[in-house]
Image (cartoon, rainbow, N blue to C red; front, side, top):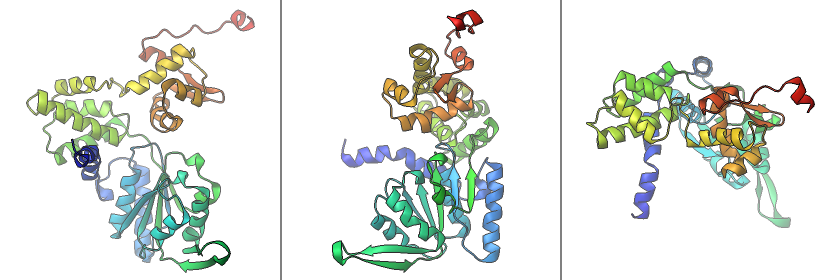
Length: 340
């Protein structure tokens, strides 16, 4: 396979995500409180004929932060420039983006909590005073210059709001937190995506995908595409509930949406560390995973459904996790065993 074909295959899911994303608030499903507050913010800016205040979107991956950033730009009829915290690795990179913005453009920074200190401090005057303080030249001949910027709107997205510094967080006039979706909302999303992708899918199959989607639209759309693949290759092209269950079982996605890494994590905490507590770094080493992957991707849903708890001493598996894994929970400690 050529390099170009590998890249095409790797970006296939990303292209589908772009196709399935709603473009306006009226098409956006779920997050009712965020939608209402955001619609008021946008309408107020339109009536005053002003740029929208800077917006910070927080929440686990896959809940629609990037989609909302694009919706803000579409609702305002302006361009959007997209980057991420790790990609803006020096002051010059930030300046190059900012100086190419036009009035009311949206500048979207994904993973904004990963900006380095120098870049973050250069962003402060851009957000607050719409100016960029540049350093021209190097060494003893270097000089400072203040460059004016157009009044733009910065939209930041983060999965870890606690890692944002206070000065950066305070420069966002609107902060919205996205929560996991309920099953009814996910059913609407799966149904809409199926119509866009022209998939013949039964209502009970839609319900089955929504139930296993971990409360996350991105996961729901990914499972829908994999069910479509299975239905076309091993079935008659229709996504029935039986076809859907077989396809998802082959993906090792169980009835609650837990995937192999989820079950491996719970099994490790329960069997290897006797239910916990176990520290994040120790757990990551045991699973051969990055701590960020566990903290940002795996843990939030397990905590949401009550299978895992974070304590001051580390992660602890709950009784619900034991039952789901088919392992007998340990007997509660008696006063005598505590003394021993």
